[in-house]
Image 1 (spheres, helix red, strand yellow):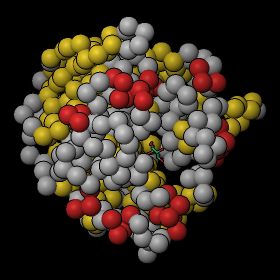
Image 2 (cartoon, protein in one colour; image 1 turned 90 degrees about the vertical axis):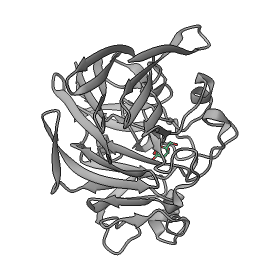
Image 3 (cartoon, helix red, strand yellow; image 1 turned 120 degrees about the horizontal axis):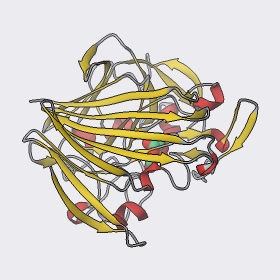
Image 4 (spheres, helix red, strand yellow; image 1 turned 180 degrees about the vertical axis):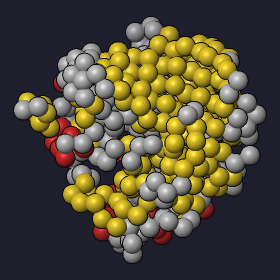
Length: 345
Ligand code: GLA
């Protein structure tokens, strides 16, 4: 493990970078937001991000960051739990939704970090106490996220316990490009998803139905090119999303055993560098093709940020879960989910 001072926050607090991995996969993780600042696959960086902490603070794309307490959207920022009505920040102002944990989510917190090495590989254990009432959510939650690099596997293990019932749904917002992050738009890359169903969304990008992908632009059951034509096609759901920004329900017919858990094969994302296979025990994944990624502030090394310059594969519960009685972490229960990114060797 290599550890260094990455930058300082405006308050003077230090942001530390931790580098773990091997010749196939190397990850640089920040204690700020648990951000994956670099992800090298055979020496090529495949993840979006910045050279300075300012980039992460001025951009609204949650680059490489841990997302919580509730990833994705909650309609109107409102939900009712155990007879109590809650109003969260409507920080996705254009649609009136609560998005990715609110005004100050887990992506903007300083996490405690511990390092561990064992015969499987290297691990960074990030912990955070999220106090009762933060962002108006009920309950104090003790959160623990373990990033591991074990051979060709890069994984994120999410664990949490709350002292009150609370909506809870964590993910990571890594923007990946399998030609390398300097490799341009993803139009020549392919995506295959083990999903028969998707969330049909309304104009606020809130699910209104669970529908088959059959006959839609979202049928990725065989590998499909993430072409410009696909993402600008006239499928009404593609139009509403401004491109690919949708939740798919993962089938559980193919699995792998990893760190003692059975994880379903969710997706394969492939480009010039090779393929990355996503496994998870979460029921869903949000596929987001960086539709809003263009902007002035440049990426690492002065790289231009472009629309469709990357793909996010965000393991999650379906959006707006608390308004369907889903994605509630009960007091004292253990939240325990894994996302495994396995690279070709
Ligand atoms: C998620 C959402 C997108 C967008 C990004 C952040 O992936 O589904 O609509 O808000 O986060 O830019």
